[in-house]
Image (cartoon, rainbow, N blue to C red; front, side):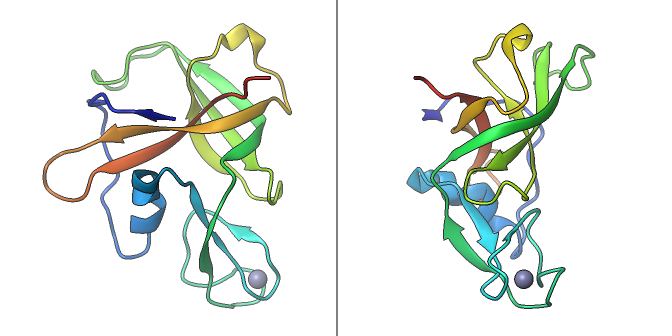
Length: 143
Ligand SMILES: [Zn+2]
């Protein structure tokens, strides 16, 4: 589940609010915020639930989701990210209303479909200035 190669890609700056999201892969677990009142998953990380203002809690996900939409990028925006690559919205199975912007990896772009089952695959990045970042990406779920 974990790709230990240095990704060479731009990494998110870790903050008190987003640190759990970007580092939970170190334990092999994908974590998202969940509202304790309405039980919706919340992403990106927020201080309050946008529906009822409750304070979200971090919850372990199964790592499984489905593809909501995607696009294939062929333009080399960053030297550290070889093209083409797939940008996608993935809905976690625990709450398909939640939408996570991510990349699909180890996939033939011509075979992607809406609702395709995927599973998290962490790509590790480090810039030596803070904790390693575990980028949650997704690959087709093997059947
Ligand atoms: Zn809520």
